[in-house]
Length: 378
Image 1 (cartoon, rainbow, N blue to C red):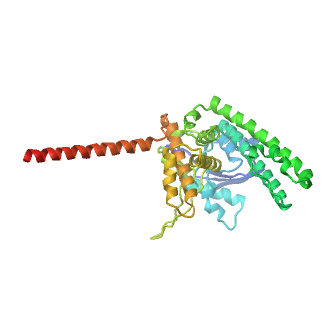
Image 2 (cartoon, rainbow, N blue to C red; image 1 turned 135 degrees about the vertical axis):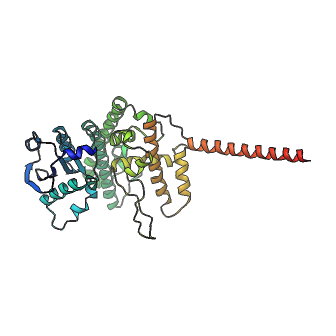
Image 3 (tube, helix red, strand yellow; image 1 turned 45 degrees about the horizontal axis):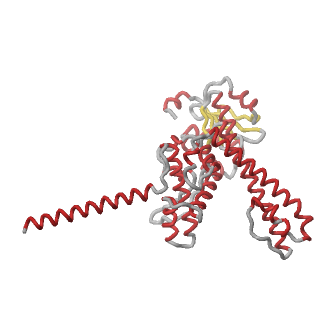
């Protein structure tokens, strides 16, 4: 945000978005309340209030309606700040919380210092629509998992046990293993599982096609074995622009893959990862990390990094190693995307080998020089 833009904005508004109606609070230059009103949470209602008025700074809270509302307000020429709800303790800790008070708090924080709102940036409309394809697939996967768990649970309750099998072939391959007494109840569920599986396969084909046609940059990310079209597309659509991050190392923190901190005085306990940022992308990265650390993962810097952490042991050594690999993977993917470099699985290992070779050569040369000096002295 440019410093000059703040001076040109005389009025600041806080807009608490509701599903049907929204509360509006407008403050003047001296933070006096100029308006408190309610408007319809529709495009017509937003346009009626904010069109044909001087530019103002509008603070809204991230939520279901915030993407399209923020785009509409920016289209109408206003400066929009989308507040991170996880950071707004002032709003959620208020014991006399109401929508009208929330709008006032948003306006006052936006007037005082917009950084206190921990602004987030919504993705563009096309990116949001394309990402909806991945999220819809995820809903079907979760639905299939619940149906499979239901079938297994019902069979166990009757004293049986279904053999292990892939979720993709669960309905068709394990139908005969269901006890006869439960086939009437579970038969339709098994058919539904097969239907959901076919829908998921259709989504996979669409995702593959979208990645190749609309997002060719995903091909560079898919050089990493274990990163498919789904993970690469989720990464590109979530981050949108690699230039958002000056350093690739900050991507891991942005996605909540770094430990939290609660340091005070001499106390600095080890904490779990923050789990901030996009949950879906974090989940896909962890799944890719599981593949890299699994039996089919290739020998690479990422795998070796995880193995070193796992060797330290501990109660959750393998789990910590997987999360650490997921964090390193996010850094690597951003670096490949931004730099355009070709992926070298053992780049760090090769560099270390070269360094060791150079150091050994220097030691050999120093030893030879010392021996020559000794001979000359004799």
